[in-house]
Amino acid sequence: MSVALACGIDFGTSNSTVTVTDGREVVAVPLEEKTVPSPTLLYFGDEPPAWYGQAAIDQYLFEEMAGRLIQSIKRHLPAKTFEGTYVLGKMRSLEELVAGYLRNLRRRAEVAAGAPVTAALLGRPARFHEDDERDALAESRLRAAAGLAGFRDIDFQLEPIAAARQFERSLDEEVLCLVGDFGGGTSDFTVIRLSPARARKKDRSDDILGVAGVAVGGNDFDARLMIRHVLPHFGHNSFYQPFGKRLRIPTVLHLAITRWHTACLAGTDKDLNTLAQMLRTAEDPVGLGRLEELLREGWFYLLFQAVEATKIALSSQESATFSFKMGNIEIEESVARSDFEAAIGNEVNKLSSTVDALLASLSLPPDAIDVVFLTGGSSQIPAVRRLFTERFTGRIADTDVFTSVGLGLGVEAVDRLLP
Image 1: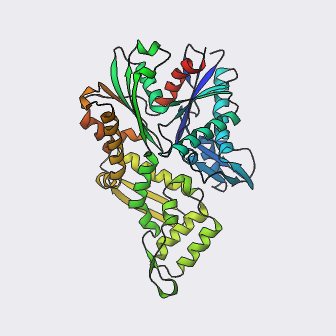
Image 2: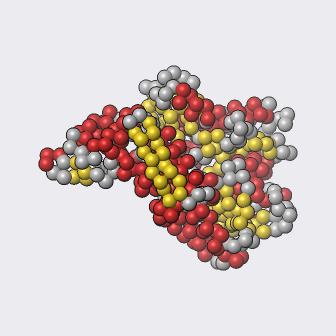
Image 3: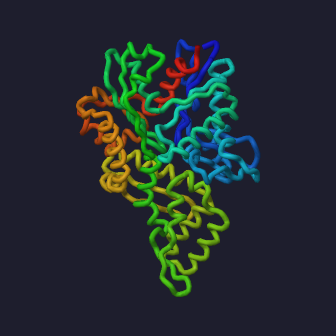
C-alpha cells in the first residue's frame, strides 16, 4: 500500500486494533510480534517515554512493577469525576492519556502504510453509559484525544455495525443478521440487513433496523469471579474490633481491586494507613495482611492475569485452578464452571434482557433472524453462548473474535472518510 488515506481504530477496554486503507484494500496492522490486537495498556516508569501495549507489560515487569501501569482507561471516559491522574509528579488529563495510546496506534499505521495517516474512523459502543449526558461526554473525550493524537478527520461508528461490515464480506446472499460484539466493558447488539449488493451502498442507514447496548463486558465477569473466589482470601467480609466493637471490614478497598480502572488508583498512603489501623484488631489478620501486601506492592496486573486465565480455562473445562503466588501471598483454589456461571448470573441475565428487548422493539421473533454473528472474547463463555444457541439454533457464525471490529471499521472508513 503506497498511500494510506484513512484508518479504522478499535480502541477497546482490554485490547485494541488498527487497520489502514487506501480505498482498495483494508490491512490489519500487526501491533505485536505475533498478533494484530494489542493490550490497551500504558506504562510510565521513573522517566519518559511511556510504553504501550505488550511493551508496557514487558517494561513494567522488567522494572519490577515499580512504575505506573494503566489499564482499562476506556472505562473512565464517561466518568464525570475522573479528569486525570498524577504520573511522574505531573497531572495528566484523561484525554492526554488516551491520546498517548492512540498516537502509538497512528504511528504503527503510518509505518505500515508508508505515509501519513490523519483520518480515522473510531469504533464506539452503542452506549458508553446509560445516561445520555455521560454517553456524550465519553464520545467527546475520545474525539478530543484523537485530535491530540494527530488525527484531523475524525468520525465514529458503532462497534457492532463495524463487525457486521466485516462479516458481510463473507456472504454470498442476503441475510437478516443479529450481531453481538462483546468487549471488555460493554456488549453491543445490532440487527442489520447484509448482502453483497448492499455492501456496495455508501449509505447503510436503511439497512440498520436497531441497535442496543449494555454495560456488561469481560471485566465484569472477571470481577464476579474475584468476588466469589478470590476476595475471601484477602479478608473480605471478615471483622475487626475497634474500641471493643465488632464491625465488618469496609468493602471499599476489596471491591476496588476487582476492576483494573479502580485497582490502579488504590494503594495510596491513606489506604495503607487505614488497613494498618484495621489490622491491629482484625479477626483475619492473614487475609487482611495479604490485601495490605497486594496494595503496597501493586501486584494488580499479575492478579488480574491469574483471574483471566482461570476464566478462559473455564470456557473449555468443567473446572480450573486459580493460582496466585507473589511475596507472602500464596493462593490456590479450584473453581467449578457451575460456580462461575452462578456468580455471573446477573450479568448474563442483563445480556439476555438486552437481546430480547431489541428484538421486541423491532417486533421480530428469534425465528426471523437468519444468522447470528458473535465477536469478542466473552462470546466464548459457555453461559453467554447458550443465550444464542438456545434462541437461534444452528444459526451461529464465528470469525476471529478479536479483529472483526477493527477490520469492519477499515471497510467502513472507505465509505465514510474517502471521497
